[in-house]
Structures are given as C-alpha cells and as structure tokens.
Image (tube, rainbow, N blue to C red; front, side, top):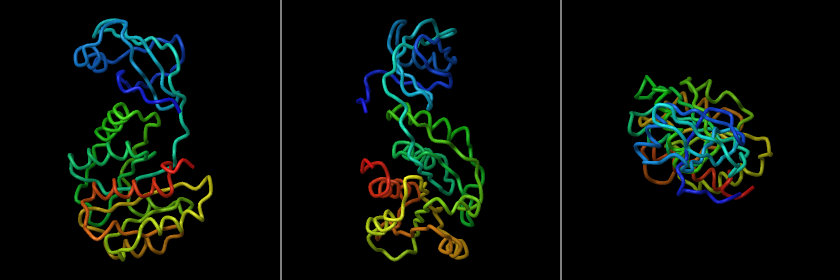
Length: 250
C-alpha cells in the first residue's frame, strides 16, 4: 500500500470521487481549509469518502463558494476489516477519546450498548459521527466506521456467527493473547469480530450469564488492574488486532 502523505491536508467528503470531478465544499469545510489552514487557490488537498479511495485534488474559489477539482488517485480503497466495537456509552470527553482511538485502531463499526449499569442514557450520535470523521482525516484511515444507534445488550450480541471477545473484569487473570490465539484456530476468512467492553460499573451477573452462554464467545481479562472503560476499549482492540486482526498482515 502506498505510504500515507501527512504533509498534505486531508478532507472527508460525501461526494463520489473520480478524475476531473468538481466537489463543492460546505462553508465549514471551506473555512477550515482557507481560514484555519490558510490554504490558497491551487493548493493540493487529499480527499476521501470511505468508498472510492483517496484522491489528490486542487482547491479553488472562496469561503462562500469553494470547490475541489479531483485530479489523480493517491490510494485505492482498502477492504475494511470486519471489527465491531460494542461499548457502554460514556460521558462526553471519555466517549470522544474512545471513538477517536477506535477509528485509529481499525474498528469498522462503533455500537453503543445499553447495559444494566450504563451511566449515560442519551447518546449524541451526530457528535460520535463528527469524531469518527475527524479521526479518519487526521490518521489516514480511508474506511470510515459506521456508527450505530444505541441498542440493548441482547440485540448487540445477537449475531452468533460473529466471534465475540468479551472483556470481563471478573474473568480469571490469564494470558489474553493465548486465549485469542486458541480462538484464531476456529476463524475463517468470513468470520466477523466484535469486542465488547462494559460500563464503569461493570456487567450485572445476569448479563454475564447470558454472554457466557452465547455461542462463539471468548472471555478475557485485561490484566491485573481495573481499567477505565475507554482505556479498556483501546487495550482490547490492540490485543484483538495483534492476534486476530490486520496487524499480523493476514
């Protein structure tokens, strides 16, 4: 895969991308490029839409009517890794961090899950999506994760064809890499993955019982210390990507 180009600004757009196309910018996008970054007409911008790869484009116009003219393809669209992050909603700053890091770690879907001890009942989905786009722009990601509406634990874990990595604070502390390595032997090319991280208050006993009775579940502990929910999500995604995901190059 071609190297990321971090010296050229990157922008997410919703338009289709092809050579010669003119992509109109929103006022917010134009303000960001022209006033915040101080770009000039004729400067180069990298654009992506999560579908058509990354393209080089040229900026033209003013803040009120700015456009990008698409030139050449810089990177093809990669095949997204089928990795869902299921997490209990958190308060604003913690959830912003979790969402941003999940994008960087290669999650393909972010799914808020309402559990017995979830401390936040209302989820700002638009804020989550904005954080997803911002993180993708900054870290070079082309496959922009989906953001799901909040659902209950049973609905979130209903697909038993998807391997569920259940991060349980009550699990016996053993080697999580070894546990995931055993699960890897059962995976096929079409097996999806899901990582489940609970709320700050932990899982209720009845929730834990339901999860452990599910087919296709790997229960792991994240070490001898209790991690905050946002830290636990990043640690779990790192483990899963290293053993089962695309960090190994498979």
